[in-house]
Length: 300
Image (cartoon, rainbow, N blue to C red; front, side, top):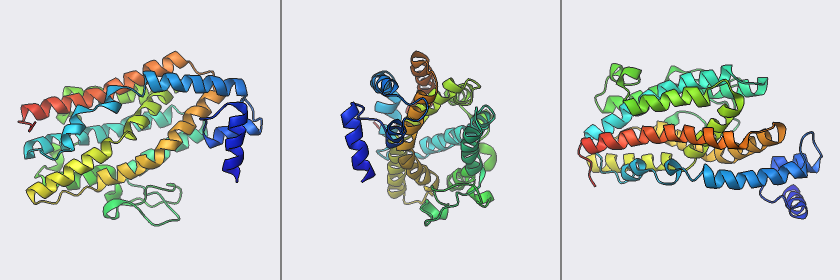
């Protein structure tokens, strides 16, 4: 019933395309929510779609397209896991910076949720856990959740690395990162974890849209095919869990952008600029992996 009323409201005021939370706030005449700003936001969204979300790392990732085919050799799989493990650990630093630089208590808590879950605090959900390999739910909150060493995301990657005869000392540390991987991680810390809130939010929006664009699914398909082709069982819980998480985050990311636009005097040009800088960093990571896999005898 509410959805129908809001759809009619949006049509009547020519603001179709806004998320439900924004439409509710508009209909209630809440604070800084106005029809003028709503229409400006919709125009800005057209710019975002054309100038940011068309970035090649979202629309045409050569490495993940190749990886999905499952033709990797053992050396290529090992390099991928090592570089991804470096990124996974460095993300903790970026997320800590994002938490420290939060501009409100709510933002700090949202960042803390992600950080605590990364290091091993499971989300406490009222539903059944839907994570793969019994590694926990992707829904709920860390509030009242329980810490487990084995629930740390890096340990999930380590479990996989062990199947490849990679030791703990051979993964995760920055010294194992390629130049392109470390550039990506530095950009995450500079932009996503930066002290300028608008830049941080632009980077966050870019990262979330990249993460929701389907690359997790491509990696899962490629790893499953690698397992089948080689008769081994690399545990895929890390990748399956994140894929499920990003499917849930897609709509929430858009809601966050709209709330940001209505409540702040957003610099549209800077938002697109820094969002693209973040995606350039992401692209550098995948480009580096693509170069490495070619050197290791990629199957074309």
